[in-house]
Length: 121
Image 1: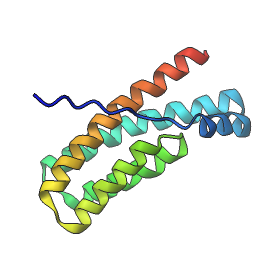
Image 2 (image 1 turned 30 degrees about the vertical axis):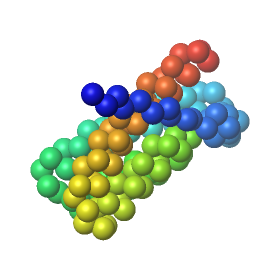
Image 3 (image 1 turned 60 degrees about the vertical axis):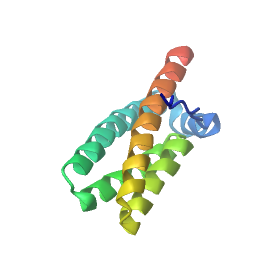
Image 4 (image 1 turned 180 degrees about the vertical axis):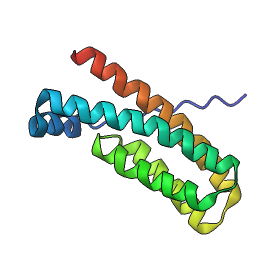
């Protein structure tokens, strides 16, 4: 059995910049809202794929790019961009594989940033 284990990297400088720019309360609010939105968008993206709604899937993946970049989740943003590219190319096999990777990376990224927030509190 192939074990899918990939390291996710968060950009602590991006998070630090948010805290400097918005203050602790403001940054925590932005990060919490972004995490909630990421979880919703990941689920929505998967649902769009299952239902064959590629235009909606593409739109949802593009929003994942923007949200991820905002809070320093570069790996998640890059994989979501790859999903968009697979939709644009019409490559169903690559889309299935890349979407599966997006969901794995998304789950790990959300866990990772929650752990970081628990440590900093």
